[in-house]
Length: 109
Length: 114
Image 1 (cartoon, rainbow over the protein chains, first blue to last red):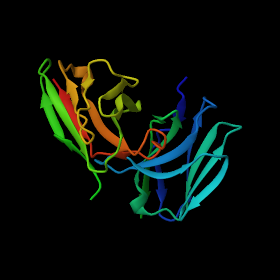
Image 2 (cartoon, rainbow over the protein chains, first blue to last red; image 1 turned 180 degrees about the vertical axis):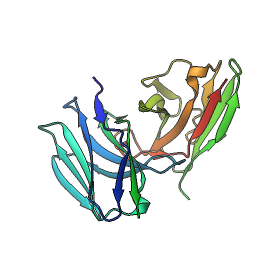
Image 3 (cartoon, each protein chain N blue to C red; image 1 turned 60 degrees about the vertical axis):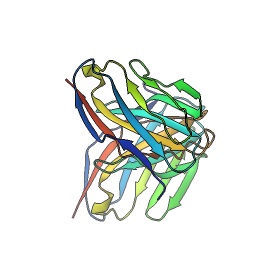
């Protein structure tokens, strides 16, 4: 079993839709939970991070962590074509990042 | 501009021909790391360095070497490349290993070994 599982998609939604991206994990010792965004032909960039259970909002993005279920989510409200990218969940354990495989999202006009 | 640079961006080579991919960061970061990204496998760490002259293996170090002689540079060396090392490679850096949840990635190097 992988430490971090993520549905690879692809996920295709119309502009304005609410998008939900999810990851599950197996190691309860993970300290931080992150979402990275990767545009085509670019390196990943940090979108959001959190370290506790609950929700964290940043504009149209909400990161949710449920430590009891070992489940994290990223919600994107009012999705835009510019949100089209691959979204990677990542977890930090003693300075080491462990990534999910990424979910490819396409938002069409 | 704060950035991580990698060179070359694209490389096609033959089995057994030694190559080096350079990585440089201008943010005075202590922590640097190399990843490879493959379809269905995601990003996997090859090697990392917590400071000058301090390097350690990641999850997939076989067939790779690194060195950290200067804080800003962290080259990845393939002494005898093989086709299974065909991949997309990323260098990354962060301030310290403690807050390495925020790693800054380079633009990637696409390597093909024939």
